[in-house]
Image 1: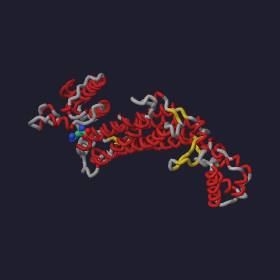
Image 2: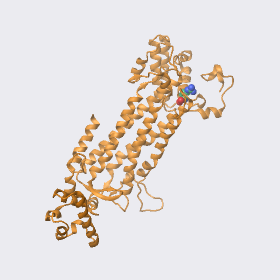
Image 3: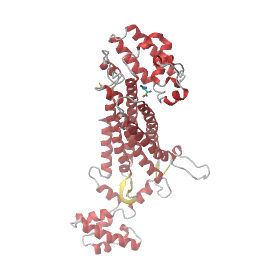
Image 4: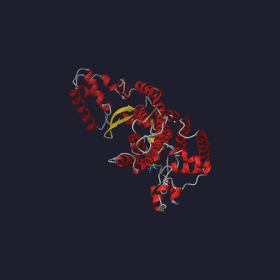
Length: 458
Ligand code: ARG
């Protein structure tokens, strides 16, 4: 392409090498809707302020509508030599309305224009993150209510520790995702500041009405510093951190689904609709959805680290390095949003083996702490009680039985505080005992689910 056809044609005698064109192209092809909306708002404001004449503003706005329709119909042929979406829109506009198109870029630089585009993109992504987490949290609340009284083993160090309810376990993820949701909400607030009007870096000599543009595009406020507004991408890093944390949380659940679907745990069966088979082993049913969610987490982290590294030591104001941000945002979004969607569909379809989980919940001396707590209630110090029950567990191991399998005289010999009622201790009574806020008692699980739902409405 010749120098004249480019936006900076006047300065350039020779055209650009095709390699340069390809190398410098940005990942913003899909962002025409945002770019055009920004340009429409800018043109309307320029006209109202008398910076360009109203007839030009009207022609530009009409022309941008036609360009939008072209994109909507998929009729735009991408030309890498035009560098980015901003140039494409302007060139297409000129093809439609001629000379007036040249007035659209008055009082604007691609540096503040791309800042605007990025903020519109990240704002939209935050909204998707908020929606995605909200839907998944609602699903988890529903399941938690359904399984509020279904026991399963709780683990520490991947060793059976104490019984919990399946509802309580699922709500742990609900709480994590609520914080993720909060992060998207919070990030959105800092994103929602209009950078347009910052010019290339120093502000604009025209009497712009920035508040008008902000209002039209749904921004809460306008930026206070033109250098910051054109050079800053911390809102991108923040969004990527929210994505990374969300994906990390889902990866923990993913790992549990993989484990629980194994023959070793056999706590659940994968629904056919969310499982995959093996090309060689006819019996296999694999948790590939969970594995891929787990596996893609690293890529989301990568985008966060990439963005932080791009910004590190970057002098003010705009540098082309910053163009990399959109690719990172889109890549993270393309992992996190579908992950939330498929988990919200898959988790309710998991077929839990509740009887097996209940049996497992009572095995491996999982009520040992409760036996110690029994002695504490009778006046023994917890340390001494711990020692007494430790001795009982050793006795069980010699006999090859569970605590409930020991005859009462063995208890009585271990401590005179034991009464026959100790034999009534079971998984359900252990669960019901943990009836304080944050505990796993079925009643508390129902309350916690209601509390979580209330947070979604607040
Ligand atoms: N494509 C560029 C980006 O995404 C737009 C801004 C270009 N500005 C410039 N001075 N080259 O960052």
